[in-house]
Length: 270
Image (cartoon, rainbow, N blue to C red; front, side, top):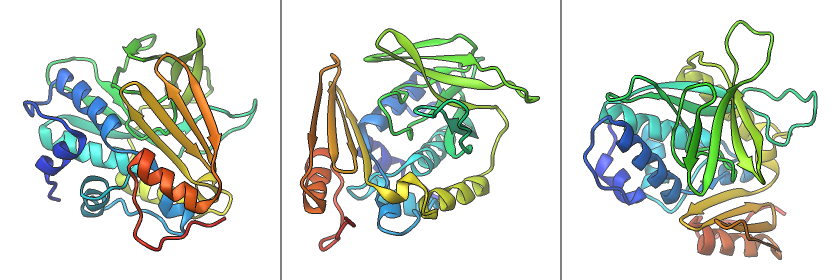
């Protein structure tokens, strides 16, 4: 399928030599994180976002919208493949915020990316809606630490009983390593994520159906909207939190603070 790389790079504000090198991967990954917001408005409004590449281009590249993990990482995978990287789709199990003994489904999408100038592949992920998200790809090496300033991450092996090695991405928070999600290196196909996307978007018990979630990362500031609570976290750790009055206020903040604009007349539930 076709993809307008010029339009994509304009959207994320990136200009450089389009070669499948580790430096290009790092640069594009960070620019994507700063350039396109995370949001789940389709499920909140009762639908499921399309993962077809033309639809992703229309939404994430050519309009003032964002998306969640399947949309972001499907788009990035297509871009990287076009440049010449070797990309595999992986499925992760989010453990951030899980209670002890709570086993969540593997519904998060991330990427394994091989650059031409590095023997070690990378984990890339521009669709994890959290302050613990990677700003740059991390080498797929047990114990690898990444200073993707202002954040820090590491990859470790997690104990488990399965036949495949279980990897865990951790983010540093307050001097400790906080688990974010776990995954194996078994490659998944695009149809697997079509099923996961439908489940996450339409299941009445899915958190993405129940409240608006939006994230916007920019140099110096991370903004997170959860329901009617807006949290701004500066790079120095300063946190500002405030509540929003109602759906109209949420729409205004989405437009003004996150760069997410819905069609005129859109009414959010609640």
